[in-house]
Length: 430
Image 1 (spheres, rainbow, N blue to C red):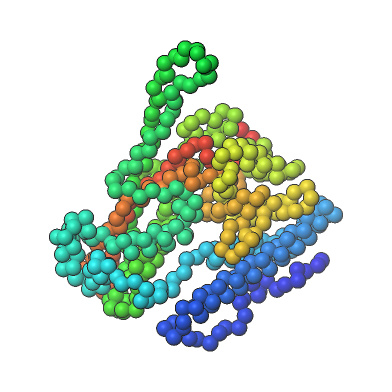
Image 2: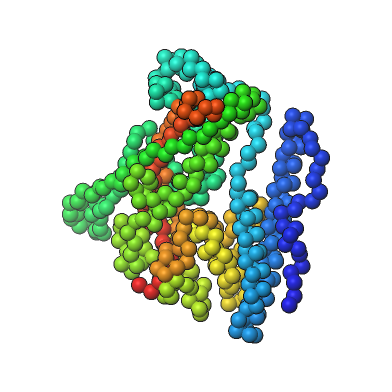
């Protein structure tokens, strides 16, 4: 049995460790060069892993052809490489935790006052801002609104780690509900000759979709020593803490949320076979096999799924699936022996399937009987995430002494806004 021309234990290695150097002593150009070097090394590791995956999978397929069964050692080895590919993918998408370059921009008055409130509980600055503009904060019992810099940091980190938020349409609203009107029936139109009489057109019929913003909360804790440390960037610290608590909850809600005190996930809507699709439902294509792809020409159902979507949506369409489903799809080939799944062409890019980008969402179901384990569509047009402006923070130094708690709340909503833009693959027969 041939072995792949690489050692799996070396995955992730980027060469010898460079000597330590203080960030303050490094020039911006050197920092940028080092960052690019790390990205390039990680990308090289991924490409080496993918080549090992292809070689091992080809070996597995050859064993099946000769012996009608794959060697268990080969299958185990392929699973190890699959896990390595998944780990490298997750590592490449993890947002950076290092501090920002200092001296690029002076903090706003709101940010300076908020830092004083977070670090030492000084509310004077926030109260003065209330007197200047009532929209800057709220009463101390409900906490204070974070400055724009901090809110932008939280939003940026959530986008980096929440797969559906990253590909969906995101709207910011100032109210509790975003109402989107749409036309269910337009005015009557028709052809007429130059001198023919024209019948009176009917008025369009308008309906609306409501997207309420629900409260999502987190309660990060900090020590007094951390808050006293001037080197700690409050924006990044709070963003990282809120991200850790909120990103998982958001990701689940955008996929499977039931709409009760949380966003409604796209898999929670009524589904229908594509031949019986109607507005308000998501259409699906059947694999024809319960809990599996067809044994013969399994890629055909993926092509059927792609062309179930109208041409206007396919230009920006992508596949959404979890890592276990991706591991199964990754082994498929076309009639010429080429893999349907391809790694990203550049560092930081997306893998592709049948030429369309792939987004990995852990909350998508595994392949199983009648599971809707694969989605395909233009999620920018199909799914809407609603963020109500304002993230509120209440400082609590009493409930968990000696720690300081920060009760942080934000309002988020979500739901399908175009039922024609997303199609599903159902692993079943009916």
